[in-house]
Image (cartoon, rainbow, N blue to C red; front, side, top):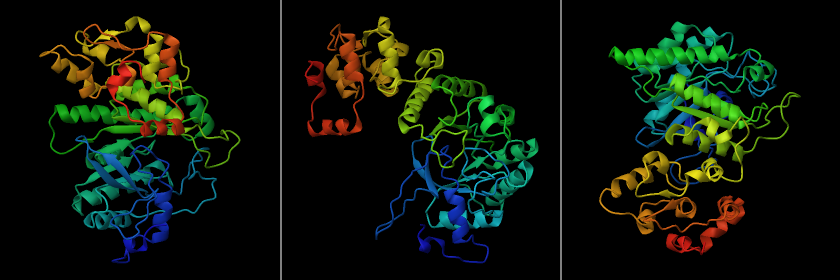
Length: 426
């Protein structure tokens, strides 16, 4: 429940607590804004955390900011099988007004509860009618309320192109959720949607953003870019299909992020699985996605012809074990591309190695100070020709296989240094 003191009504236009409960709870399954997922309640301290209603996002400089996460309406005319707000679902319905959303955002912002807004909506009445209301809301926030905080706005598939373009002039970020990775699954589980209705506006926005920048027009046009969301496990596609789609979206549409949401059976339907997909599979997809964006990997390298990522170890370790011909890597001579593929060597560590070896020959003690994860990296590198890893592949595989969480926690009860690990004591 929300803290009632949080919603003191200053005038008749302030949104009701009941409507707010419905619209914030209905928004919590959209993960494309880095939701906090907290359920802490204020017990005499400062601040509140909720599982729905407020979420966290991150700015380019690494700051964490709080966003009000809400739907404009959950009264949907679509009947997507997996959606808690689908037309046939028996749930309380509510629709806000632009004035109510603006009042809420400004009141929360002045109280320092939030630093921005994540605004989405079900498709009520028609795509154009919904998009018109969303545009009216963000336009009012910017022009009448003078709000210059962060706004993430959901695009509505099949809405008029002019409305979408206008929305991009006032929002910092927009997103069209693809949800399912193939056209076949969309037809089966979300019959009112299709790939083109999602991909075409994304391409148009990207082209418009490029033209806006090249022509040096005044103002802003999606300065924070676009994102999308894919549901993992609601349809039978393996990880390989999901990652190849993500790779294509990054290359063709310039997306900032693809978010992965593991399927949770919140509604019953004979076409849907009865068990959740599991958070570990979602976690592995995020790890692989990171490798695609920052480490020079291709989707085909990580999942072959279209299988699933291994659950027992992270995808970078799995790739290294499958390609022993590239290892060990000598850290004093290897190019950046080779260092980035070493398990335990992150992007920052790789750049530190390149800089440091200009002045001295590096050994394992230097790598330890650079925070290289030697527990993994030692099996794939040499430093000044010295190798402290395990040579037997089955032994390396056993060491790199992640233990159950209960066993991982026990590691903290017996601290050890990285040097002892290098001598085989780990």
